[in-house]
Length: 266
Ligand SMILES: Nc1ncnc2c1ncn2[C@@H]1O[C@H](COP(=O)(O)OP(=O)(O)OP(=O)(O)O)[C@@H](O)[C@H]1O
Ligand SMILES: [Mg+2]
Image (cartoon, rainbow, N blue to C red; front, top):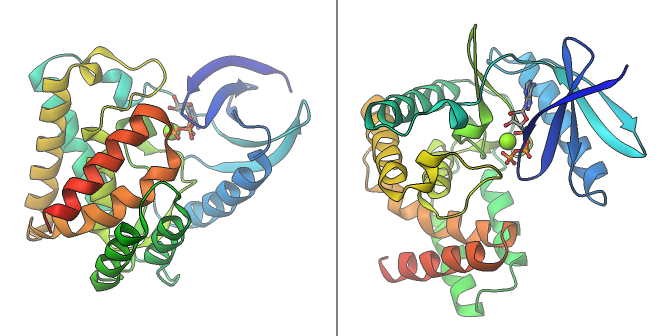
């Protein structure tokens, strides 16, 4: 089979057409590709067994010396690219994102919780926070509930394809089992931060639209779930802390500063 046109570029990988009905996901980082591919394939198989709108995973394969993933091709733009730089569009899709997120969180999964353990590992390994900050963060994490719902943990508009058959959720590399508010806090943090994905659309670059998206997303999620909004603040500290090692430069500095303020507000 021949590689076709480039369909999309994310932070970790590029995705190309692979024949007529499939795609190939090629990770940017050659060194970590093997680890990431194995992890994502394992998650994709689990997700395909559940009743979730996700592309069918086909197989792992070698392409030009790199280990890659083959998936079913999903037609349509991502929500990220489809949103117009207009209030009604930003507001409509923010609510839709919350509705799809809430829907995923209703899926029952028979795997023990691993989200808090994963956060704890990341926080323990993060080099750029002080030992006293680390202690505070880990203590706060300990007090938070485990939860046992399916969390995508990279749930943003770039990971939703608006297909003719409805929204399809892609990119399950980070999926975990844990508390739904950890997943919601992570999404809110990504929407709210200044970090931009490759080829960011205008609405995301303009702060007022980004703020509106975050507000509408949270309002809709808390409306649907009936959960007390105050609980989100408790999750901010460990979610910020475990994000730090994923970022570099000014994007990393922003999250470190957010962490310091969140600790002060506790
Ligand atoms: N099955 C698919 N069918 C069609 N297009 C796809 C498919 N999977 C991914 N894409 C396109 O490729 C882009 C990158 O894919 P993906 O989200 O898996 O990469 P990533 O680098 O892990 O993203 P992130 O920035 O969220 O970490 C998507 O935003 C989408 O445009
Ligand atoms: Mg993605």
